[in-house]
Length: 399
Image 1: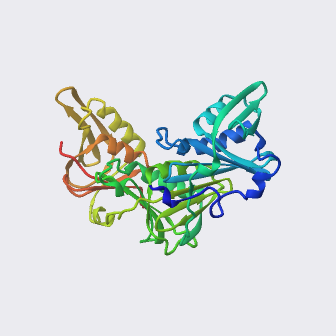
Image 2: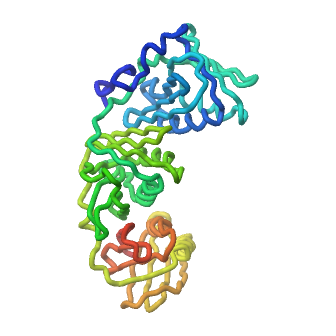
Image 3: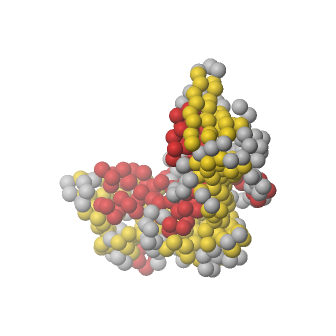
């Protein structure tokens, strides 16, 4: 991304007021509890790329004003701002190495009060706690790239557990192939299901697909569909741990923002068109297998132990109320295991990649896994009991 998209740090409404930084002698000084500081830094430093050609991108921008301090980090595609309460003696702003500051704070004793003091003359930030003293090199805050603020066409609130389910259950199917870059994320959009309007997350890598629905939050109708990049999905997870939290979601054609009172995560979205996934979700698979998901996953895991790393193929042989899982790897050995299942259709033999089966089976929380087959060469559908709000598709392989 070229620098022309970046506003200077003072630009827009993102920067601090200049007045605050000129008070006193312009040296930031604050104290903050170690646990609070560690939590705020953890989120910021995980966005920072370890290998950087632009030195300032390895830094976190610390801005202290009033009774709070904010930590801002970016990789030019994602920006995270984490706000925490602090005792600010002198307002100000500076940037230091995100990873190093995080490491220092992590190693300080629990419950310590940490003092951060900027020495503008030497270009250092002093960190003191008890008898520990550190001095870190700083870079000027004016050089720190702040993401240009966007006009968001859609703004709505969603409970953290709802977003957590949508993204957690879909993300295993995200493609890692760089060539099909439009599959390197989760497609978040609005759709109509048999239960009405929904907020839907879809991910696929061409071998398997996850489609997860939640009731459409108020204000989300008409939201543009966006592909949320994998790294953003992983960073977002950290905002969603608190079951009580409401997440403010803002979406535009080019950006998506997730915010709690303490953290704002802004990300560019993948510039591409997500394929028409509805075509690959089988509608007429009639052969129905119902099996305890945990038992099934454990059995698949056991028999896959002998499969060769490359193919990892597991064969499912279905007959009336019994399922035989088998692996035959000529170079290493063979294994089979029988499971009692509910199956009343004609005999079927079908093969799958063991890893894909395990990942899909592990998505099932409460009820049995229901697999719907057509033939040994067609995609298979999996869902939890009769719940159609989460469906998974997996392509078979020849065994």
